[in-house]
Image (cartoon, rainbow, N blue to C red):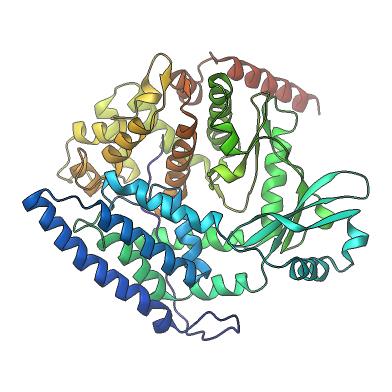
Length: 485
């Protein structure tokens, strides 16, 4: 449905030094450890690759060791580097990593999300009161000083409003915005990080517009720092899905939200770790809800929440899902959506020449590229059988790994098409969404009529699943109501 480039990082330059938080800000000082690790990793990768080719020696230990080095360095670096590491943990890492070792890197990088040390309760309260301009006791009937969760930018506390509503209060760490802004101006630091990922593990570099993708990621990371923007995004999703039979978006409490504090309804339900152990029927329903939220928001709102990972989903016993965290939202123009859907529709119809023609018109391939229409078609359609299947299809880790290898490996079955595939930077986060969403729901081992759901999206076909019929009725009623409004 979409295509995924390697997430890039921003360019620009400044020479900010220390900010008093113990994090070095000098451009060369920040870049030097990454440069050293890049050189060391590249050298070791060359030796390991040659040894494996000549003797068949196992290179697993090298990749485990390298992943641990990445995590240790990114964790110490903080700022945008740590944020970028978190992004990579749920986007399949990148095409330069051999497919059989991607899980090693994703698992190691995931610790950057789950192991964030929380700020002390006193400091959280101080930030909260400074932002709201009043005492915590006057804003909330109860406020829990122990955080419910801690992440890279802020942490979440449970609280109760004076009217009795249970809420979640997200408080941004002091100094984190300044640290990330400084990194986003540091060309040497972030370019070195990108070089590390591209050339440190593979001698074959995919051809993406890395500087453009870098600017795109820079915009998204910067947006996540402004909780007012996140609140506006969330309110837009909440308005669209209010009353939906299985998609739930917590309501924002605007009077208790600022640029660095976001207060919203508390979503209560099952965690992801509980969900993966539930019965098959519930797991199928949760996966379908996530799929419909992802592609339905893209189709109806021309936007989607581009941060798909298990911590952003609260699961409910009725098959519904509450969707959290709207700091990273990507919007598309109607023209961009038409381009993506037209190509996917041609693939769905087995239209080889039509797929090639539309890809050339969109600029994804040049007509002079040494790529045949059949190669382009196989690259875009091949191994995406969940969307082309005409019956129930069960997602498995093996299937997703095969798809990633087919779509993203520079030495895989579609290497020639991938080498010449040109993706505009604005589609960077569409790729992150597509790959991230599938990488998440496969953990549920769900089965569904994904092909019928794709036909709904691309061809306007009537829904076949029970959840699809409920959703169709909901939006039909909404349309009638809006006509009389």
